[in-house]
Image (cartoon, rainbow, N blue to C red; front, side, top):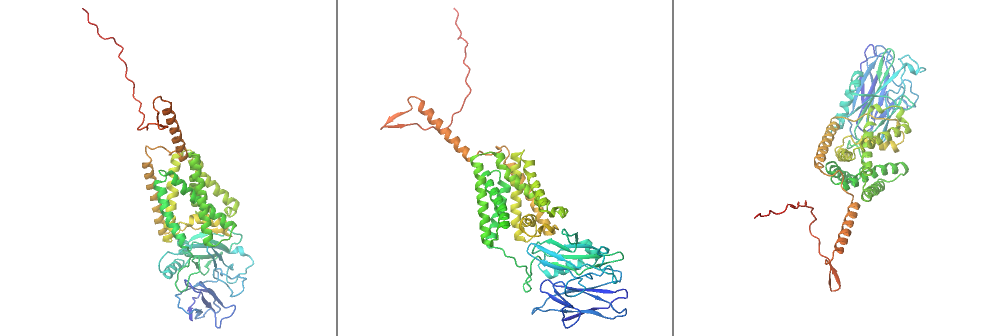
Length: 512
């Protein structure tokens, strides 16, 4: 147990104490022993202490570690004048009052942030909530091996109002309540949250909050994630399938149709099974793989038996549209109340998906090459992102989560684009450029599309039939030997040669 104290300044009328730790709740209390209304127990506890006497020398709070292991704690104290808003003064929750800290509810897909309303000043009432406005900021914690050092550095970047506006991204609630926000969780990447209360004559800062999108193990300091070994094997196979599709997809047209159909089936099957079924991970994985195999067989059958290039390029261009729609809906400009409606969201998504075939199908040959390059590069990038622990895969996971996660329609998307993500994004763009150049060079002076296998079989059958008919119709080409008919083999091919002109001039005549 420790007592954290400070010497208030003359202009300070209330002090905000806060402490932070990566994992393991700590207790911050105003007095001892602990009572129902004098302590806060969390990873980011905050308490507000009013300066009752103008010449008060020391003001402090008690910090307690209730665990049997040691934790590192970052604590700080901020003083405010009597004209500044009082964070959490208008709290109606049971427990400590005022409640100047942020309440974070962490789940695997979303992080819910709640805070109590503030009073306009130390003497103000809570009748008119419009007197105080709020600004909410979020900033990502740098992905470092030392989680405590990374967290403390991120908290230091949010030390005052100016630094918060510099390092953080301002967001606003997409739901009906101003003080309840939902953020998309990108575990295990952590985030720091800050709320600024502004009144006419001043502003103040709530106690900061942080979350890693998971419950961090207090002993190991790691974010436990349940990843099946078979999923890792599938990701490794996807890396090689994506590279094959990106660099040689159009040359091996039948293989590209298998890959396009399989991953389209995996995408659709995952959404449908998550929406309508509640399955275990192993069963879900095998059913999703079965959906991919079924759609791959369907796609290949369409090409084998019909052999229509335009029809076979529809699915690849639709997948290009899915990539385009996922990227656009990941941008922060799409954090609007309009898109919280499922009807509006899926209508926009459908229009963006259909933009792919509408704009590319007129150029069928180039459209298929471009689809192979883009989809193949993305398929190769996602496993790399998965193994490196970066966040570009959430561009596509956001759309999947929107289909089955409750309240994800109100989730705020803040693009996760730090140095690791930018490096991987640059590698992705370089792969797309290199793969496009490779496929254009390989397909130079080649037919736009190969014939379908069924059409080739039909041509071979017709050629064999015509050959047999011609050979059987020529006299003297069949001989009876032992009661059987022997036909000579046809070797080589028929070559047409230009006919020579006959010399019609009469030979010279000797005149005697």
